[in-house]
Length: 253
Ligand SMILES: Nc1ncnc2c1ncn2[C@@H]1O[C@H](COP(=O)(O)OP(=O)(O)OP(=O)(O)O)[C@@H](O)[C@H]1O
Ligand SMILES: [Mg+2]
Image (cartoon, rainbow, N blue to C red):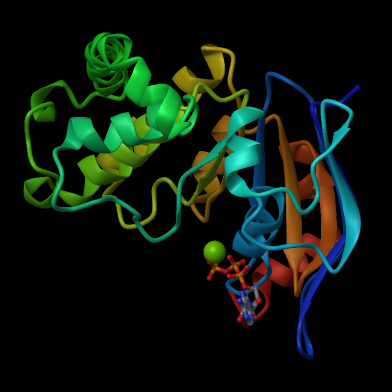
């Protein structure tokens, strides 16, 4: 059984059919890329699967369990994490605290219980700090552990988002354009980081415009165009698909 199974997924915003009858599945352990021209529906697809939007129609299954319409919180507890195309970092917090936010998302947040167990929580907080620092090292941010987010360069903030998502200990992570706005050297580094995340056992679904990165990294690729599935398959299959060639050589790319 696939880890993620999406069937006939659609969402309409008034007259805009942002995602239309999209079906695909992602096996555990792979790197899966979603590509397509601007406005093709890539981010909307992520928003549907990670619980930001409720589908107009269609089903989403995680490990056999129906998750369509569940909240981002509920999905986080089931091991689904994500990063955002536009950075969602708390700029007035330390880098480390931003990562700890991810860890808190997976913990018990019952307030009364928490008050009764304050010593346990204090101990847990120390553990979370260690864990967050370890994740910052994992993504290559060891030099920024005590830095405020607003004094970090953009490239480092992109990695910080990945660290925060990993703090949720996900099975499945969605990365929306992890290399957007990065220079070629930083792009290669993020490429290596995505590979490292996948090798650590987390299944990766990513949106990326950099074709070299997509072809290098991905086991399979889904191509969207105007909200519809244009093609799906391995890099070699997708590259020689006439519809894909037409869409990418067209004026809209
Ligand atoms: N909340 C919303 N309300 C109305 N329309 C929306 C909403 N979210 C997305 N859309 C529309 O859905 C379409 C797909 O947008 P989406 O952001 O998913 O594209 P994308 O493939 O991620 O593009 P890009 O490569 O530019 O990030 C666009 O026409 C967009 O305007
Ligand atoms: Mg997008």
